[in-house]
Image (cartoon, rainbow, N blue to C red; front, side):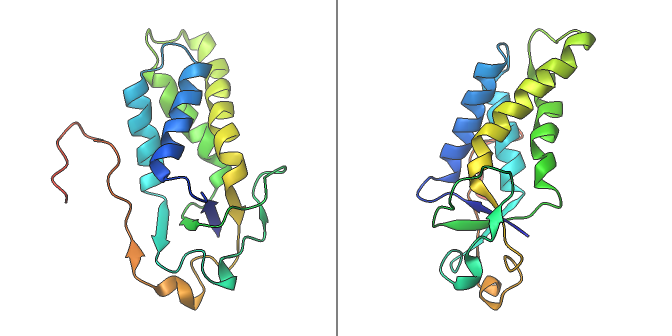
Length: 159
């Protein structure tokens, strides 16, 4: 299992940092569309309970990426089979948000830049923990992250 260790940083701030870094890496990337994409990626993969980060079972065992920093205190479960693939998954979708559309021979290079931008932001925040999501304390009531941005263009009705 994996953990996203944000410390005091709100999830919305993480999404903003990834968006800014990606837009700086690839001029022409639609900022609003990129932010919606990053929000979607995290909002469907992050689960947190009131107990997250409060129990010994919440202590990360190791950084997912080599060179990851010491974990921050507040954690959430990152529900993904292969978080190492998240940067490439983001990049493959984000490259379609670039205007004008890149020539086919430029796509791969732009995807590499976008993946690197994503990875640079999340590298110090993702950790492995075999107990995360499985320990008894994890059965506490989940705290759902509110919808951070409009994903489908419709106003958020709170549903």
